[in-house]
Length: 383
Image 1 (tube, rainbow, N blue to C red):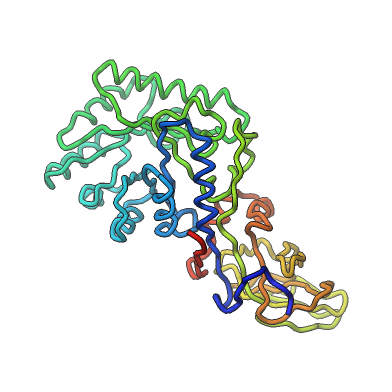
Image 2 (tube, helix red, strand yellow; image 1 turned 135 degrees about the horizontal axis):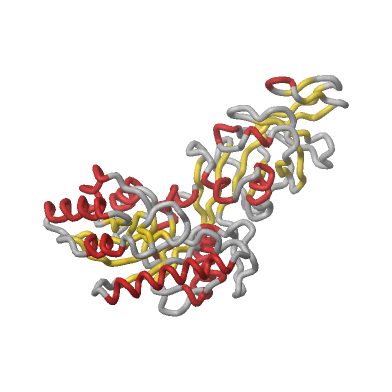
């Protein structure tokens, strides 16, 4: 059998798994802490099931490491964590339908507010439940997505939103559009708009405990903008924002996710044989075809068919033919050590970056980890 990594047990998964290294996650948080201005809290972004890593286990590790709170995308993500005993501050970064404000108030999930209508509906629900709802005013400083305008035209609407009963104007935030590029002028423009709007509101008696604008790239490149909180996302998981210029600080990140699959069948086909749906690969020689238990339903994009390489025994072998829903085939003819059923195949991880898949697909590494299918078993090590 082809040798695998030391300590690897080929019985811990049946066809495909992602291994989540919680020690690497903890080490990444420590690196981010060193890169963050002393006194600035770090919010851990665990939305989208922690970018595919599993929100509950990663949240526990990050809280133990010192995260000041968690950022989610949806109220359901937050409620799920609350039901599993996670009691740290949580906020949703974007849209929550007013029909879900009952849960937002009940489970103490801080809400992004970017219109008076949202604030009023939250206020009504908080008063109904006899509670106070913490809100984070969202400013649009140049992302063009959601947020109050920063040209002064909606300042009064922000003040009205913050003055409603049952509402605590706890935070104010915005989002950089280009901090991971060399367009520093635009990032500084956004930051100036953000701070000016905060100053205007302060002069009118509206002040916030927590100001935050820095995402992962902002943390690494603009320490003067860290303010009260920063929001760490992709760098928690050991990946850099694609195309991000060199950080102003030294930082060593470790990939947290390793994606593996198993060899499930091996055979040799003669020259002229075709492989997979559509017969888009024809063997030019007798070819050893190794079938791997992973397909596009697991998150291995069909666009990687016919050429993208998977790693087996430390060697790269091309996918041949179209990737199927549950399986794919690789050419192992030229391997010096013959593979066997049960051998491990690496898709990406610490020895082969997810960025390679992203580049092949014309996307970003965020999407690669998020796209790993729910039926792929998550195995947690360390932590």
